[in-house]
Length: 531
Ligand code: GLN
Image (cartoon, rainbow, N blue to C red):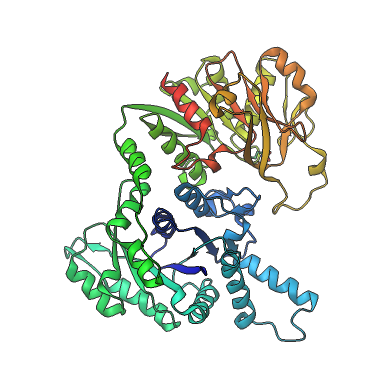
């Protein structure tokens, strides 16, 4: 079967949840037996979001093949369980870079290189690339930004051309907002009509409209929107606010979004969708028996999107444990040795987050010391693990000034240091240790218990590493390496066996947690918090 394409665009406002709609549709089609891939096109000029400050764009999500991508790819993986790759996230920067590289090679044979057709051709090539391998029945491509933005124009133009070329092999879903004006007591459809008009001006007619709303939409309203926007009334889909994003696939099924899409693409409905496991997860999410309080210590806590995958991992791990994990956001720059007791005293567990640079380091160290000395479950991820090593070096081994060379390049005890292959690196983009690496677990360790297997594979995003030169001294004092990269010998996990649950990972487990497979370390950490 040749691949069919679904495009998802947005209008009226940003943050309406295109990524969640795209992920939900993927889930529904997958549950009807289709092989589906999600893709995101981002209209900014950065080659990838790896160089973006989390305040700008939230978390940077890392794939198995080491691509630094948009956080929507995290939703795709968490909903469908299918790994994504570099091909699933394309930015304007990447498109232009490819075109300019080709121009320098002389590939355009003396032609004037232009947005149309050269940039749009490159966009189309990247959209079709996922489908070209025959691995997917449906590719769902989400266009970042909002209709009317200057930046998204070349992407929409490429979609216009591609839809023309693909004929009945494509469907376009446009997501808009229907605001409720309380003074008038009415839902307003005019912004949707205008948004569709903007699309029509550039030659793109949506097939399905998904209307985000706080209140139920009447059939009359749906009919009105259908009439003004040239779509079938059954192709006007209500997307009402829900308490969790994980409800959305179920709501979209009720609204028959999957059925409408398949019919438009000329594909059989098959049986299903089989949402049994998904609904069980939802049931557990809404019917928990216990609650725990977990402190998340980081420097971007005002912006919860900066730690998106961690938050979602706790939702998955909580459901498995029949409990709700309440996250307490603790700003590492506001935490000190003096106020640690006051701030942390009611927590059942503490997670110290990943990060870069020296800001907030003392707060992170104070949180770790508190967790270590009070036997409170501790989970350190990447920088959080590195900080646990530093705290141990300073307060247990009494190595004054022990540090990471990222923070203090002249420290006498560089317990976290750059490996040789990173020392020569000067460019920032895409040069860290990125993507999936194997790790061998030590039998009997907490990590080994959690995973229930010896060899695991987890994703990385960092430059610095535990300095194995000091390993023997750490182990003699009670902090041991329980995960090792079998090829390089690098330390990937540290633990304090004497402690109730004290685990630090150099990798990022949060990137691999999904509804179908909650991450074993998050599940074990939550269990430890409950006990
Ligand atoms: N800054 C640290 C490093 O580069 C940790 C990175 C992270 O937490 N992702 O090694």
